Length: 126
Image 1 (tube, one colour):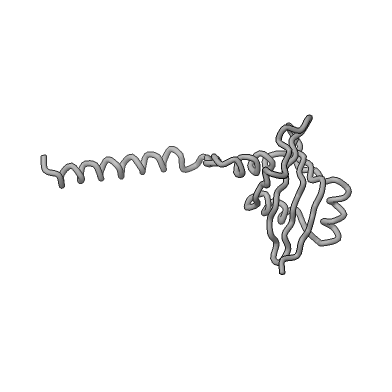
Image 2 (tube, rainbow, N blue to C red):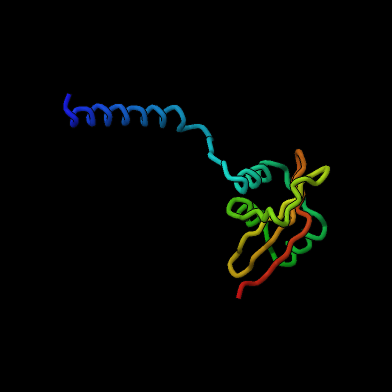
């Protein structure tokens, strides 16, 4: 069998394999969150969120709504150097994200079923 025929058969098989994967996995909400940063953010996003009084007052003063918090949890970065991943009873994570000209840092207590935003620091970018 010639080399060109081998590539042709390989291409046809690859095409049908991809079509089958798209057909079977197309409707599923599958995600590939393999990095530690993505896994922590996904874990926080799927839980019920609560706010401390201190963070709630900062959000109300700066007119920050929950959609922005969700955006930071989607695109933010977890600072594992500051975070306490061995804290009892719940892990503490520091998540940073930007909003227009501001950089926000959340201190989040991540428990089994609830993620509580405890503190918020806001720095203006210059």
